[in-house]
Length: 483
Ligand code: NAD
Image (cartoon, rainbow, N blue to C red):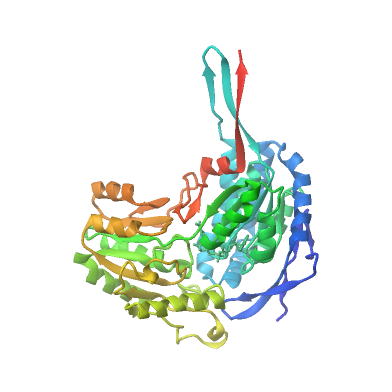
């Protein structure tokens, strides 16, 4: 089958990478290449910079109402092409079509709608300085932003950056993950069709080491929004430091899912199946460390194992598939390595742990892994401390509230946490003690884009969402007018 060729998008035109080199990207469900990605380098970033910096003076002065109109149009066009985007996201990433249709693509459209509305309704501060005059604040667009995104929620997370960035009047150079560039490529045509002026959003495809690093090290790109792994985040901090860039870093997690004996058992169970294995466990917010209060430990574990065994793994395009393929062969090997490590560390595989035997035909070469539950490990084990980012969870019994708070917080990460209890005072007490950017009580993945989102500790720097995104994508200035 002919491979789709992806090209860079600079100044509203599709252009070949300057060095002419491409590499293959794989369909994870079949384990075969399905597209070719430009292996972009510094000169490509330079071309994109030229386009973005030329567009900036005009776009930054374009009235908010006009910017919002174009963002609404982009959202409408994504909706109109929803099926196409859904199929492409599933083929490129390995996720079930049902998930891309329910979450990824609608959210990509909503990101544009949300920030279109947000800029129209934001009000700046103003205060009288008695005896002197009047202060007010003004938000200034910053310039050309570098937007670097990961492979797990490709279009969802890329548009979470593009929408506030351009809504605030900046221009952008995007570097989507080299594993999942297809929907970003499709978005380029949507941006053009929506009437976004040339140069406002540019897309440079390729690897992190070449294209990504060239963005981070570019001396005239003043802000970088990055979502990805913690190790990469550390490199971005180091490489951007000489230029004092504004950074937003959304990084890895090892999130706790705390289940008290007084929880709504069925609700906790059903949601835990999702929070453990949605998107093959490849969501930074998945709750991979499950802590269950001892009185219900056996019952909960048995029910979780039973529910997990019923999950269907395989053809991502089948409507009843729960888990598709992991994103790449390398990632499959990494995740499987953690399953093996779990056994070495003394854990018991309650279910899963291997490639499903049921795979037929072309799917036999895909990167599928059964959803896996490991018990019997202690909180000091590597499998309970390191981010796995796959369909692998550990289950551990705890005795007291103090103990579980201590274990949940004894992590170098602090992205999110779920707490399950019907006791109102305990809900607030435990939520108040947990070191994580987002704490959910009796729910998971309930996202309100008006609220701050980000990680504590090695899960990130800064917050995005609502006003916090405006803070990141603008410089806030105070102007004092004397009487
Ligand atoms: P990654 O860090 O390998 O890559 C992310 C992006 O950074 C890719 O586009 C990649 O090409 C680029 N990149 C790699 N090296 C770079 C460098 N030196 N300079 C500039 N760019 C570089 O991450 P991944 O494997 O794509 O994604 C998985 C990770 O992302 C997990 O750790 C997950 O927890 C995290 N994640 C976090 C959030 C969040 O909101 N906190 C959301 C999704 C994913």
